[in-house]
Length: 215
Image (cartoon, rainbow, N blue to C red; front, top):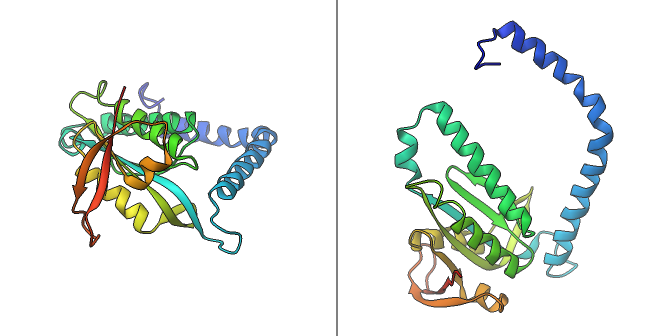
């Protein structure tokens, strides 16, 4: 309607009419909400460390960053930038959920995701890393994965493991997925190449990492 040049009154009327859709959608939303709660409960059960601990769970945590996005977005029109971000977010959710992972949030040009299964996290990370560079010209992803105990509050994840995964992104070169030794050991069917030890900001000791071996 905006492209066709409709005025604000016409848009307001459409918005008012759309409110009526909620009543017809309520019957469909109830089973979706129930399914969402069941899936969230199952994720927590699988990642639970011990029954006495309510907030601490064991998860693989990943980050994917788009290298070159800042420079390219500076030259984009707001409309084109909105389309770019919408497509990036939609594809990230599609890729992650297809393998059983979950996008936690988008932080600018970076995706944070988790999975209950380290193998699924590797697949999600590798597909997110390989799934953008070929179609987005100069924008190429790089990724980091870590595995361990995390604090879960309000649908978000906190702790040293989360910080480590985020920092590994900065250590990776474009179109590389770096993982910790703990993650590599927990995903025996995935293949990795040694990538040495890295001095990571915020961590006193060097971190041994591996590079995911793409097919």
